[in-house]
Length: 84
Image 1 (cartoon, rainbow, N blue to C red):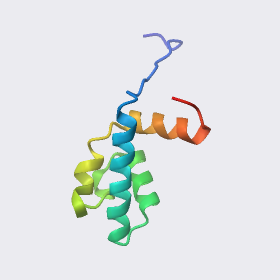
Image 2 (cartoon, rainbow, N blue to C red):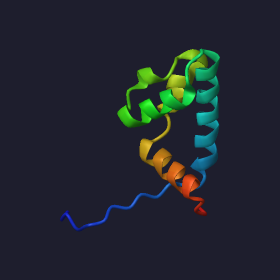
Image 3 (cartoon, helix red, strand yellow):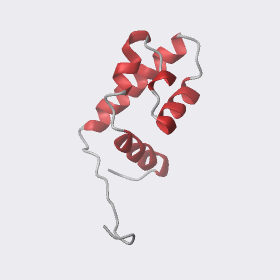
Image 4 (tube, rainbow, N blue to C red):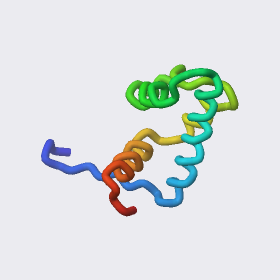
């Protein structure tokens, strides 16, 4: 691959609902344990270190089911208001 080649990522649309549900569950588990969920999830996304996520309610196992590229793709599309 040359430096001018473009790499594209495609999120399977059927995964968006699953990813959202997992994030909501992880967010709730972090909140219940008294953590700042946004900071913890961002820390996990940036580092891929699962210790940012509590084991409470199986949250750490759940978040590891999400591919980071899929998550970032979905978040960027959502932030920019782009359609699927």
